[in-house]
Length: 393
Image (cartoon, rainbow, N blue to C red):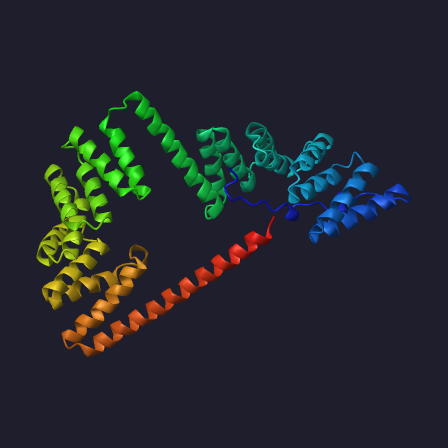
């Protein structure tokens, strides 16, 4: 239940110079030498040497909390949690306000599946340092493991506020919400196991898991129990669409519109299915109505351009693709933008607007080059991260 989480305690070890120790001769001189040697060994990942040095430090100065802390971190990196826990615990008993010790004590207990004690330790770290996003994230993770889903969501939300773009925090926050949602649905099932809502939720779950045949059966059962409920026919149509059963998808989207004529989303989806089914006339009519309701829809302009191009109405198609490339960048999908420039280049050539065609083709080539470069960078980053994860403890 470790979820691929990686702790990096080597960044947190404490050096002797942080504490302003007055070092004399004899034992204190040996202590200073051993502590410095342990710090260097820990930096260089010579963990056996670090453990031996910090162990000697705890003998020479048993009331020096930081020696116990560094020993605990070393044992942690060696995955010797049975030895890390008492060392970290000792550092806390000697110096209750020491930063970091409760966090790694909690993580070590979590690694041993001792979730309640893990929560208690990490909660103490959060009390000492309420703005520590790592501690809040781990508190959420431990609470999830302990079965306190609502409290886990609260901790992870705070962590996400502190570091809004942290992918680890966002992953665990999303997972917490999924588990919370599952708990709510289970309560719903207990309250009314024969409800059409149960079948609707099961259909969603099966569709997300690519169990499309099971999703179809649950959608159909929900519709049998509640034939005129808005949204159910659209849900069934989406599953048919995933199966590339365009005829059945179109039929269910039409049924949805009979139940709810104001469902613009279903109307748009029916139009896209009509394009893929080589019915551009039907699609153009539907998309014209969609744009009447949502004139700023970039996606509707793009799909209408596709339909009009299939109908041979090059002028109208060019106008809609031009509306796509003129839309604000934050509202436009990059693949849609790239394809719109390509379509414009083809349409302008057919309309004998050769200069505009060349300009559109240049824009398409520039975007494609940028897209290819971004994909290359993402692949390199993924490979680099994979290498780092294998190297990190």
